[in-house]
Length: 154
Image (cartoon, rainbow, N blue to C red; front, side, top):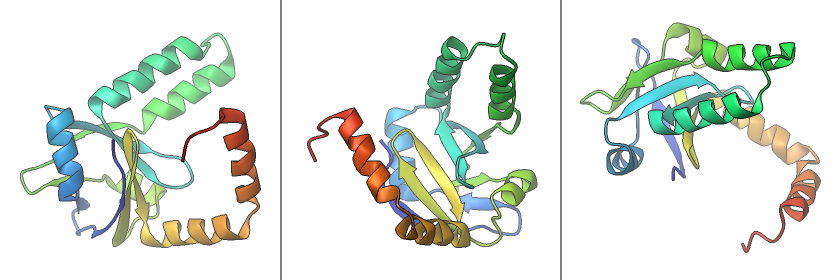
């Protein structure tokens, strides 16, 4: 499981160093280190180990009816921006220009571990997200969600 928050930089070639802690998890749990990088939600990029990506793809295939136009649109948007990537010997991945532009990534990057994936944010975007989260009534919505899920034993 991926957890934590890490501040890193992106170089002029679009390379980002994946934190050592995350690389350890990938090496222990996911043998080949093959990854999928795609657009995430809320303005970030999402980096999945290939095995996790396959589970999501299979889940989509089973639950999204392609007979519905919205199902085809969702599937297309989910897969069209995804690229395969690997972590190089220096522990880096390359983020292509198209994905950097989509996530507004220029220099400072924040990598957040979120269960089966890593989210890659521009520093400015995650700071804006944090402010909006604090200013919103999302706390009340989270309480409602916790009630729906049941006792999570925190």
